[in-house]
Length: 406
Image (cartoon, rainbow, N blue to C red; front, top):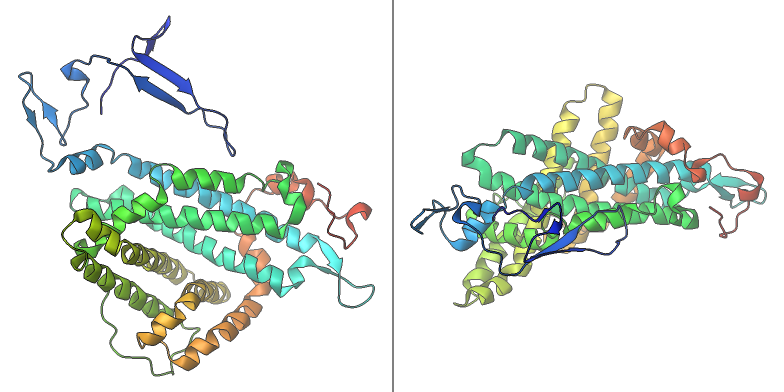
């Protein structure tokens, strides 16, 4: 990394070309490409530090090992950017859900009985998806707060693990944000395609964050590779499932998630050892398991942050709702892992069969709280009131057809 002037009052300097990039979807950013053609730099232009120093006689010294490690050290500042990218998409997710849930209560359609009209929110097929997204948004919020505090207070001894956690959280949060904003937009139909209604650009913004400050897949690959031997595997479960465990117990569900994490951790170590002598070949052989490891580990960190936030709630009714929401978040993540957890002895066959019914019953219990849960995101009422889609229904929108107007 180096520092050099790019322009003066007459324009760009010799050998330097600055090209403006074309307009992109989402929030406008004035990015450009800066190119250098035989620009001579003095020794003092090098940005020096622990990663490398160049003496006047041309001698290079570094306290950091390989060229790759020096490069990673030099760009370490992007860690703060990862936190910012996560925060921006998290805010977009919360706003998108606040809009979609408000709309679900305002928009009425024909009911099952002639002459009856019911809000969209009355349908399980509609509110269950928004409720699942809301549970995820709460987990994203609590994880981001914990990771931010960890970054602010970290020391040199835990810098590497902190930076890895920030990277994993950034990947998970921004990927979840894209899913949430897509779901929120779809639940509002054609009206949400119009930017004036506040939802159309959220997904494009999430796409930008997924790539910015380190592409998600790349940073997860790096994190997974570091975790294979650089981090202890989750503890082995004390005993196999007896069938008496409750699928609504978030503590039990968190232990089950740790089993999936341990499975992929051990699988990644096995695959590295079996991958041959070629470094790229070893990584290619182990990369699928390594990436599969990062997912449950990060979700587990989010679940732990969720549990810590719940523990601070003193009102019993609020605590009960948040515990249910935490359980829903975990069940949503464990349902696709039913086969793995069955083979690992963590769930019984009967528990795997019971997962869909448990999710259905938990959703029914939480559905009446959906509006309150998204109101707690505290999206400014001035913003919500400014969106035409959220205005009270008029005679022109009281039909049950799918032909919507903005």
